[in-house]
Length: 151
Image (cartoon, rainbow, N blue to C red):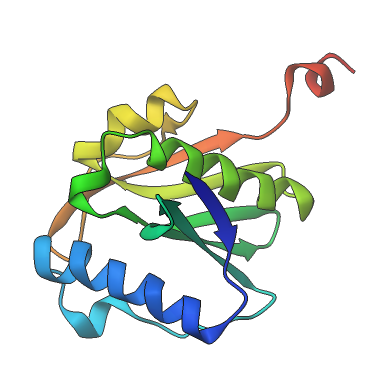
């Protein structure tokens, strides 16, 4: 299993295919709501692909905002969800945020995944809200390590 930053449009299309499978086909998100202006290779948004046995099976992106990173469009193809790929994906997105000087990350987590994110150190920061007909909560995580907090 590995996670790599997407640097070609060809790989970006692989990520789009995964998102269509998970969000559009499986969860019923309208196709026109799934893709936006951040679905390009740019310095404002980094996209990742997760591989299992050299097959692309997961994706996610991080949008850099003022003072924090926003993790978005995180998904793993259904047959691969029990292999720890989601945790590796989140860790890789957080590393990008740290490299870019972000001290905090946020995400809109589906309520069915809230426990997963909490195990990774995220705190729920809102009431439930609807996004594309799916219940979500705002979650956040401070990226300071214990060593940095002690300073």
